[in-house]
Amino acid sequence: MVLRTLSAEKATALDKDLMSASAFSIDQLMELAGLSVSQAVYKIQPPSKGRRVLVACGPGNNGGDGLVAARHLWHYGYQPTIYYPKQSKNELYQRLVVQLKELKVPFTDDFGSAMKETHHVLDAIFGFSFSGEVREPFPGVIAALEVSQVPVTAVDAPSSWNIESGPPKDGPGMNYHPEALVSLTAPKPLVKYFKGRHFVGGRFLPPEVAEKYGIDMPHYPGTDQVMEVDGPTEEL
Image (tube, rainbow, N blue to C red):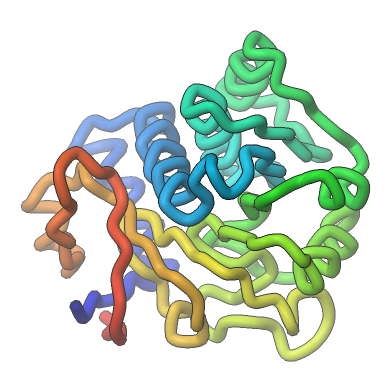
């Protein structure tokens, strides 16, 4: 199935439309995104292959998606651990942290040690809006992901990748190629550089919004919120 990709500019405009004309709240969009990501992890790393999942969260919306995904993974029977070194003071993110702590989900400041104990890593550090320099403490984290011996699933974009041009030419992430990618709402242009398993999650878009932005809606099976896709993509 050939899916068209969504540029950073159009992805930002889409989010604004969803929160205005379509009346979605940021909480709802984050919950839907995190649910999709959690279902993808279940398909990639079923509990029989190992239940320990290290969730690396950045300070923005991508990190919020990771926090939501971790909560769902706990309810599926996984044992998530959260690495969230730059915690946001925004009330939404603080509530997501409280929800995880209510479940006794552990938080860690030692990413390297946690990597040695996990079966899978969820990269929810930077998303489609990332640009510029990777700042501390994330260069070391991304360097660890580059050489990870356990599979990594990236949320919307492998952290440090440019949405248009893919992996950086040098510095953190230049050799970072996670095993799986979950594109939220629609694939971004960077997928042309991605060679692993590719999933799309976005089973909530109103048809008129999907048509306006040229988004191809996959035929999601059953009650799934995510679908694995193969084949090329086309840039809008």
